[in-house]
Length: 356
Image (cartoon, rainbow, N blue to C red; front, side, top):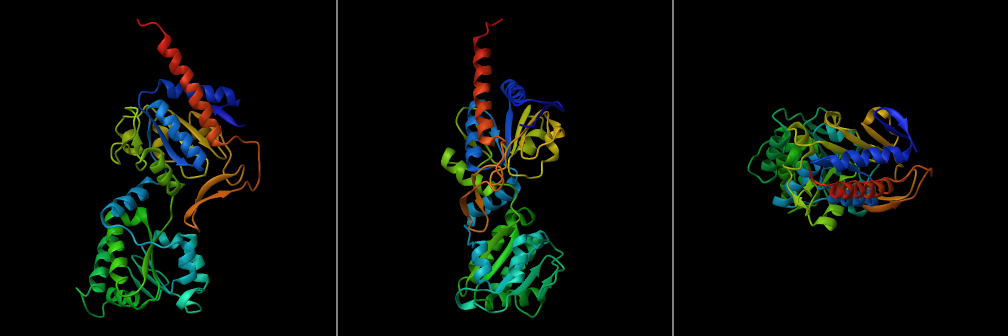
């Protein structure tokens, strides 16, 4: 197993001991990223409970934009498979959604199911100058642009302006899909977009679909719910899970100087944040390098080095992915379990020391 401590290559046992020592001494640790299979995510929560750490995810900006909207207005969503099979009109909201692999699939194929089977798929755009049948740059901002579309869809605005044409085309669709990037659109924009889908669905079928998810956030949310009864961004400092999206925002905590150790879990590769270098850190990552953190332990990537349950974007569900190229790299869950045991040993030893 590849492992490094302070940039120097070492063996697995030494790296795990160094990581456990760092975590055991920390007064306010964070376990972040959580981009891994379900077994490793569960192990991360077990370790957080042992440490009294808080947890946050790699894609929490997008996740909380979605959850905030969901808590107020609900959601009317579809899956990638349904969009590819049925959608005859796609509205792409913003710039980021144009980079989604799903969009290429939508462009390259016609609907194959239901009443829309065999029909041409119409592409619309708002917030981008794009190659679409109708494209509205919407320079005033995405949430405001979606609000204007909704006003036309509800009949509060009328006329032949470009947003009115887009709203009319959505109203004529048999199966419309509003494709967006949650981090780009933001909580207010998502709430307005869900309202647009609901308004249109009074007379036709229209659904939203988020693209561009970071890491395994969509796996973390249900795992966190069944382990703690809450969404991620929780803390275990009082030995019971407390949920607070602001208080346990890892980036905010590091910027405020509230954190003295971070364990970054990235068994499923995901970009590491800039703030990770600002605090003593441990990285459990696939294809790790010495520079990634103070202590780096290379772990297997689920679905490649070993089997694991991951979020399946196509099916919009948790599914098991077998190993495509089995290796002897340890799973992140196994390393987290070893860390939990070592941390317990360190904590027991510190409690047994005589008081001064």
